[in-house]
Length: 80
Image (tube, rainbow, N blue to C red):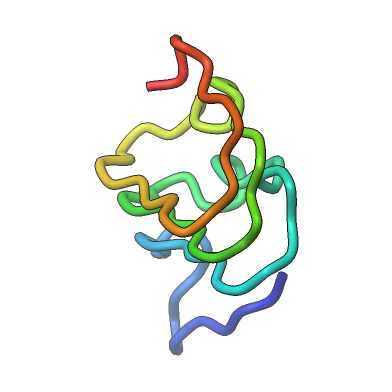
């Protein structure tokens, strides 16, 4: 995972995080700690198969989750 910030910006300024066309069966761990002010978190066409309620815990401002075009098998009842 890599990215670049605009001048005078840091991880606290990041509002959106997207995974596109990545091969992964699970969402990466540690995203809320890395980007504490995310409002949008998306994983499109990643072959994602599993999500856990803990994948979205720790986000204080998250309002949009996009998980389209994946291979999700199960979504635990307490995820959202």
